[in-house]
Length: 477
Image 1 (cartoon, helix red, strand yellow):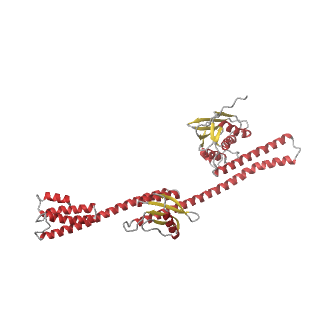
Image 2 (cartoon, helix red, strand yellow):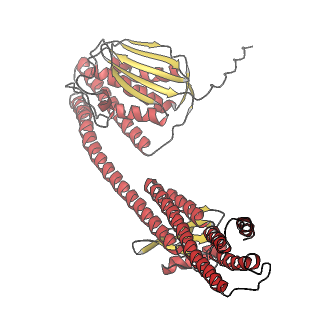
Image 3 (cartoon, helix red, strand yellow):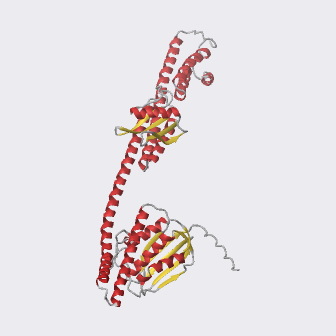
């Protein structure tokens, strides 16, 4: 009003006295737009006073020489009040619209975060973060445990107070909002009719200053409860799917194993019965029967070892890693499969390296690859094992010069119970699946590709830093 009075004082030399009153009306509108309703009403009263004191004759007094100016004062004040009310109303509506827009955007962000959350912990963290940001305080989400107790799942803006925990228990028990009107608010998270947790927000004030707070926090609680219900139902569906898959695999494994065990058992039983029934068998025939018993027993041993390894890997057992010479692991695997390889020549290249792995599992991996090569290659076919260091990783290739994969895709061979298309070759179809599982628990990969000719299996094991230094042996005295 002081600035407007100064401008009007300068403008009075060019305009008549009734004209400058429009400047005061403009000042009241500006005050209403930027300061609110009460300051604009004060500005209207001050405008009337300044106009009377400085511009209405006699000047510099509040005396009114002409009674017609009373109507001017009344019209100026009334216009100021009307303009103030309209402008401040528009200002309040604009601010409310901005708040609604901000909260709608925040709710959209919360809905996006909840939609992408795949666990109850992620849902609770997103809810606490949004509530604390939207209401300018602290927020916490507490979930009901198996024993009915409340457990803190997420908190934002500070740890929850004992008072909040107490009100949360009350809200969980009653299924209705609870809390102090001027302190905090606890809303139950209802998944259907059953409360699964509590959302606590503090500070909270139900004084009518922001009527949109209650619908917003209730909508937030409903969104969080729906997200928790979705996560729980999704986890139950996944568990049911895993149980069905495990049951299907168990049935397939039982069917396959019962068939593969029946063949060596029948051979062993027949050979042993022949040996027992005729003690006068010729030495050559007895030796042949004993050889059959030994071969079929070894075949059963390999099958049982594969089954045990599959069970161990499915159970999530961690490998017992240690630094072992790769040449030693390969030598042990070759010794175990020597009878099955027969007259196939095996060439090993570059095996003088240390690997950080479980020697038992790694030996089983090589045993399965060598056994697979022996089953699917003709007698006398050479095998090559190449070892090399590449990019801080160890690569081992087992290559043969047999018939290869035929029309089958190499990746399909790593599926459980998947066998090659070559006739007359038995097996449960678990060897390559177990070999890949062993590679994966070591953080590595096992792939297959067609050779020229034959097949090539490539094992890649990641590096584990520098191997320990082996102290030099003391010279014998």
